[in-house]
Length: 45
Image (tube, rainbow, N blue to C red; front, side):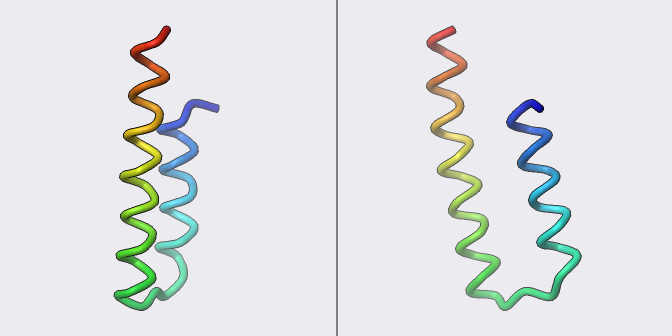
């Protein structure tokens, strides 16, 4: 499974549940960090 596909899957599952604003902000930060880390791996290939 590609990283983008996995991220979208996780987002969909969390959006199905009601989230507090604080929890949603934390999730967004985690996704941004994940995206930054995978960019480095993509550049190395």
